[in-house]
Length: 130
Image (cartoon, rainbow, N blue to C red; front, top):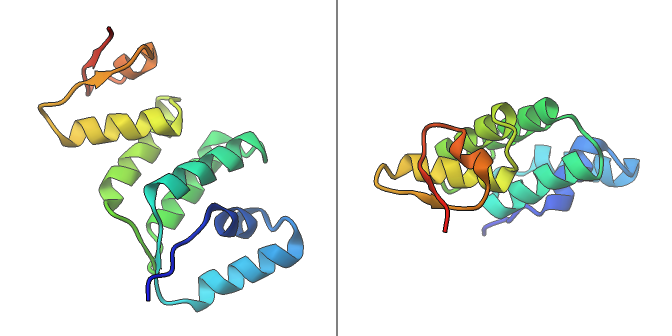
């Protein structure tokens, strides 16, 4: 049986808000052998922590890295997610734009079509603008 993690489990675990749900989320994460974390759910978790809870970007990045590296959490491509977190943290892009950069870096024959000039400042990918 696959257990898919939802954003609210991770957010409750990290924030312990409200405390009862935080305890339950933490117990679930600690007591279950394997979860699957879709990339979209990690992106939403980053967004909620940063936008709703005002967690500083470096702390959000550290929490995301901890989730990706957890022994009981599986993702499709942990290397792409770790690179996404690095770009998000150090280049100050949104998580979604950082994800595009990480995907484009993994495919050497790719470009990113975007009006976002920040993507072009990363230097490891090529951006085109219509």
